[in-house]
Amino acid sequence: MLIIIGYCVVFVSVFGGFLLAEGQIGALFQPVELLIILGAGLGAFIVGNNGKSIFATIKAFPKLFHSSRYNKDMYMDVMSLIYRLLSKSRQSGLISLEKDIDNPETSKIFSNYPLMLKDKLIIDFLVDYLRLMISGNLNAYEIEALMNEEIETCEQEHEVPITSLLQVGDALPAFGIVAAVMGVVNALAAADRPAAELGELIAHAMVGTFLGILLAYGCVMPLGALLKQKSDEHIKMLQCIKITLLSSINGYAPQIAIEFGRKILYSSERPSFTELEEHLRQVKKSGLESRNDNATVNS
Image 1: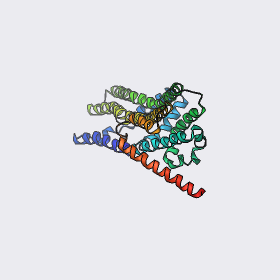
Image 2: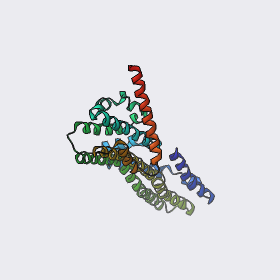
Image 3: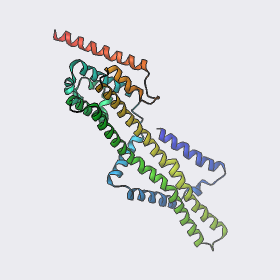
Image 4: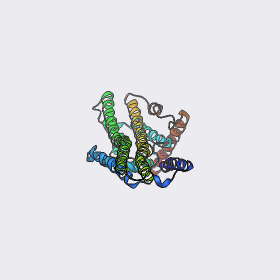
């Protein structure tokens, strides 16, 4: 929705300002110039990327129109989930988490967080490192190194569509100049025409430069910047999980480990200490009620 609003502001400001300056909006409608710029940009995109990069860029487009999932509520759920898992492992041993991590969809703990289960990359990251913790064959330094490598790989994958869009955006003003030069060449070839017609041809040629710059800085490059922001949000989630699990491996109690994870979040999404404490208190209460219900049924 914000993308559509942003584009409306761009085009209304540019074309509205042109109309207010008593410009003729029809003079800016040059399909041939647009074909040259967009065609050259698409061709350059295909040449500069392999099949995997092109597919990754196309796949990234739907994400642009979805609001961010990684808000304060999502982080509260993540920290609550990890807290419950770490508390269970502290009470019954890490081996008690095997059933939960082998089938998160059927786990009583994971099933309380349906939004988390929809994010397969986050769940896989969490489950994989819990599995490594259970194995006991790696120390904290080795697990941290492996986490860093995986997060870096994820970041590099996210950079592929971002780089592709920004490169196309960088090229569009140059293709606009190409279209303008071709228009000027066409105008000079008709130098024997009346001055009015010649001036019109030159004006049409200049539209190419205008369209190239507008498409680059008003349309394409903002999409690359937005993808970068979404990538940073995803990486921050992975870092939050990493810090929390490493704190637990180093011997900190679940509530302290969760606090370590909370401190690295962006201030716009970071819950306060009181908010997180109250949330965990509710988690403890619901867990206690659940155990009491089970005990009543068993008796």
